[in-house]
Length: 267
Length: 322
Ligand SMILES: Cc1cc2nc3c(=O)[nH]c(=O)nc-3n(C[C@H](O)[C@H](O)[C@H](O)COP(=O)(O)OP(=O)(O)OC[C@H]3O[C@@H](n4cnc5c(N)ncnc54)[C@H](O)[C@@H]3O)c2cc1C
Ligand SMILES: Nc1ncnc2c1ncn2[C@@H]1O[C@H](COP(=O)(O)O)[C@@H](O)[C@H]1O
Image (cartoon, rainbow over all chains, first blue to last red; front, top):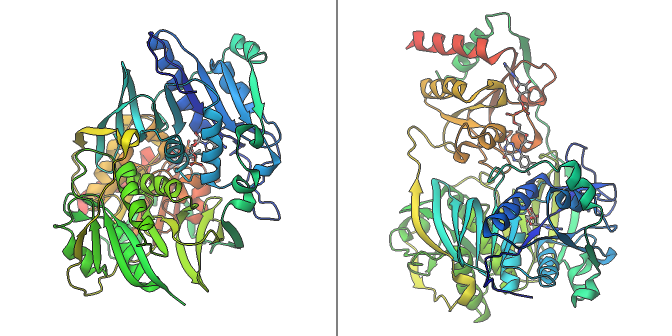
């Protein structure tokens, strides 16, 4: 439900993706979709959105941070991490029908899940670590019919207006946007806190509202892989670059660099 | 078999059309009989260049009065498509605005969007796009089956820009419907960071520094070396996040894609997200004190050594050469 803050309080919905540990080598299922059946963790990219939300709620003097996530196998490990940071509750959409959902379908599902909570602002990361389509937040905004600002490197709320510094090719733009809206933040926008021991203990009993596609009033045949409108036809190994000469610096290795550059006629 | 019509979302910095737009136009000509552009702004200054790269027409929204392209250009495109003027393929660059417009459009016309593509082909009348995954070690080919128009986002430097010798593109006004609340974000001010020397994604030589430099002050060595080589300085995300250099210096998955003649990586480990932005360089030189650093796996010349020893000597020797 959409709610505009009248008192000095602010409710923020933060999209958080739970992903396979990026430190582990990625793998594909036989149907070419990304293997996501192991334990999933909070995408580091989303820890910035969570921190930003906690700080904004704090500044507003009240309100709640609600996490929104779509993940297989009722996964909550990543949610618990964000709850331990200080989020109040979570909505988790977990449904076998969503296996292989594309960015547009993900956005439809997230938007429907967001509508289950009261919010003045929706935060997400500019791009996820595993999918990095970078389109989901803007698609969520479009589905909700809300304005949006992507690539935020600085976010401030002033009454009913969000002031954002939006990254550009040459620097940044100052953008203002009325609430409610969707903002996607870049890594480094704030320094994410480490969950405290108390936070970790408290997180165990915080509510996670787990729902299925049907509970959101969506048709699984449309938002799942079958309705994704795409089909992987092949996965090939890319041409490998070969390693060349590797030398140990004996104090004179810089001469090898000079020779290399001279041979290329760039100096 | 080819497509009859392809649209390219054109972008410019002021009057200068972005290289990614030229790259997509070159590919669009290969794929389609008719190539047209959509431009969020006044196209009078760019119609000539877009025509020279193969666009016969440019649909222009006119000044967006501070509105962000995401909401406005997408709404305008969706209206044109609904009115029956649909191309079979819409190409967008993986840029700040390109992603926003493609994302909003995908919702407006309820079609999927494929991102991060480095190649596009046509199979029968289906569009097939190629996406690198796992740091570019594997290439996934995906066929779009949702019907026209197909939306594809392209990574910079995937295609070679080439003029077609065409005359100026005809400019046609593209009406922006009322976007209501969705279009309420406004740009109130623009900040441009001064840059000297060649641009990072156009320089023939790029010298990038990473966390191995140890501290922010040592980045000066990278700038000095880049200047001596008439190249551009770059960076890994680690030192961008640490605040040593601005984001515009970042090379990689979330930063710029560079393909210079020579790429020098100093104190950079070679994470897959970094390599995806520079492994297309013609020659790669790496300096890293760890012989096991992944960056050596793709280097033509690898120096196992301390950047604080190698770089000062290299700089001194180049200065001596004059
Ligand atoms: C979604 C996502 C997107 C990302 N996008 C990008 C991106 O666009 N670009 C990017 O760069 N990264 C990106 N990253 C981050 C990436 O994973 C790495 O964390 C980052 O590239 C590491 O930077 P680094 O090599 O400078 O630091 P490190 O990995 O810490 O490496 C430092 C290296 O310096 C060497 N070293 C230390 N001291 C010395 C010395 N005195 N002399 C010589 N060598 C020394 C070390 O041996 C080490 O190899 C992304 C990550 C994620 C999750
Ligand atoms: N399955 C998901 N659950 C929750 N949030 C998501 C999901 N997919 C994408 N997002 C959000 O959208 C951002 C961008 O994702 P992407 O478009 O995949 O790069 C992520 O960083 C999240 O904030």
